[in-house]
Length: 313
Image (cartoon, rainbow, N blue to C red; front, side, top):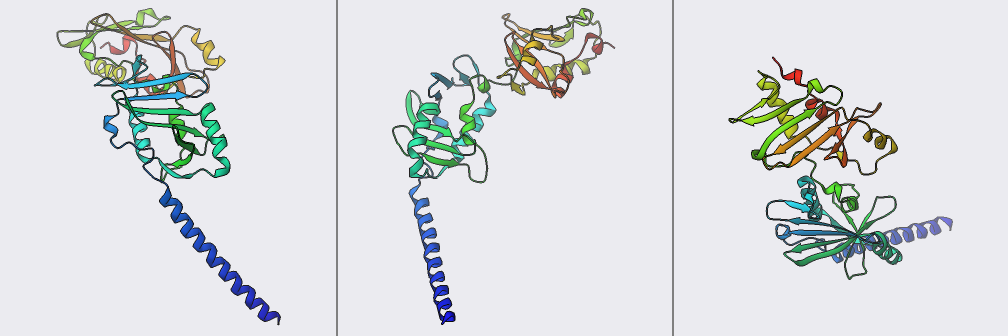
């Protein structure tokens, strides 16, 4: 009797398992079919000439506009081309995996309105894509929601475990081009290096008769000079000092180890000041044009930390 009962239970278990498998398979297939993977994608990204990122609740807006040759942030400075590439690549690859559970839709929609980022893409002056971006507190899930719609979607980049929303959360300065001396080098006039504690090591590089030379050095090592200029021309910020600590604030109040100031033919100046390394730090603090501080790699700073005597034969 017990054996027959066990057999009936086993048959019932198999039947229930089969139904569950069918429900999961067909339910999952329908869910996948219901989600348009192109919901947040552009038909032709190359036509986008303006991006506006508006942060809810902060009255903060970042405009990134293409002027025909380069991307400009808030009409103030050139954008980082690498970030622009990453931005459009993210939009191309990011896909809505599924709608957020019904029980969470209202709370996520409310979160969007309070602290989300509204992303608007333009062709000319016409908005062609408009949606909201937010994420969870653990920064493990990203949600997109079309403007004017109440349905939020869990968005992922297939094959990658990344917090997609982090890209849209960047501050204005983080979109800034990380090249320090970003100008037309055909307009170069002079490069002056000043050591506050060793003025006898100051030097000036000028361009004359199609050649670079050091005014204070009668005969300079041209190989060293060429390598030095290349290092200066390619100098890039590792990271802007967005959330400065008291330690760095105190350092910025001291005299720099040296400064490099470049002037062009219309007397515009571009400057970087380099401060001494802090114990235990793997980066060097610098200040750009006397107002914006940033971090540089030790390797890059080592290549530009040259005194006048370095170039002498």
